[in-house]
Length: 144
Image 1 (cartoon, rainbow, N blue to C red):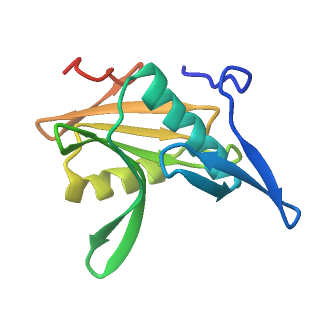
Image 2 (cartoon, one colour):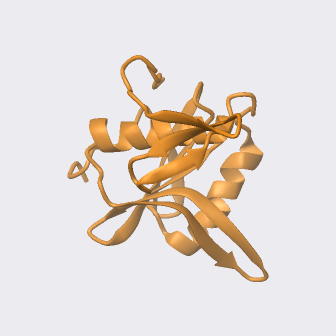
């Protein structure tokens, strides 16, 4: 299981009107710090520093008529969606319902890998020939 060490990752915080914000290095701005955002920032650090991915989009709109949804993180490899990540707050249990949601999003994106995390528990999947298999971690950039 992947663990996040908050002492290892250094984040920039600030308080505005008694509310905490965290600086997002990908979006290059301060973002309101919710429990889900805390998880998202740690996953971004993991993807960039440990897995060496740099082409990322955050909260990208996915239109699945008639509903519009947002994908938490999409990692690109050679300009194609490669990894789809769903972030949840630490108090949220990772369930089949959440995995089903990510699989539904992926019907439109066609990512090869999926990740769901609540910052405490993390699940990684590979999709190949319409079969989902669980992995111990995600591949680093260039491994596939």
